[in-house]
Length: 144
Image (tube, rainbow, N blue to C red; front, side, top):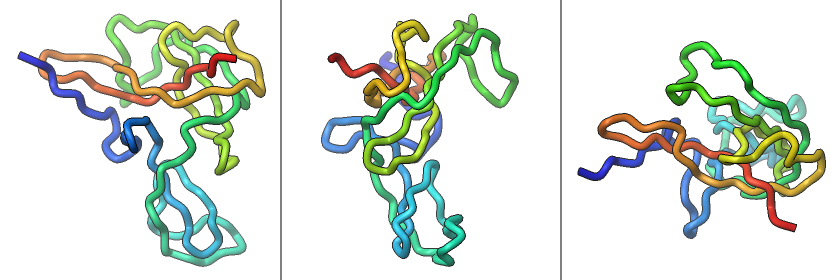
C-alpha cells in the first residue's frame, strides 16, 4: 500500500504551478512580509494594520549564514531515527528580503556553501512511518 505524503507543518508550504513555495502573509497596509503567516497584527512599528493576504514567498534567495546540526534537538522536533547530522541554512529571500531558516537538501554540507550564493526551495522527505511520508522544505544550491 502506498504511503500518504503529508506536510510536516500544515499550511507552511505548498506547490504553486508545480513548484515548491513557502506560504507567508503580507500586510495589506504596509507590505511587510511574514513567515510563518501572520494574522493578528502587523509587527511593523510604523503600521497598525490587522489585514493580511496569504502569499507564496520567493522560492529562491541567497545564503545569509549556515551551520551544521551535529546533535539531535529535543522534542517537539521530530528527527529521523537514527538521527543524521545536517546543514541548516539561513536564506535571505529574493523579493521579500527576509531571512528564513531551513535544512540543507540531502547531501548539502557546510563545505558546499558560501555566504551570498544562490539557493532554491525544494521539498524532501523528513521521515517516514508505516502509513505516511512526512515532507518538509529544504534549501538546495542553484547550479552555477
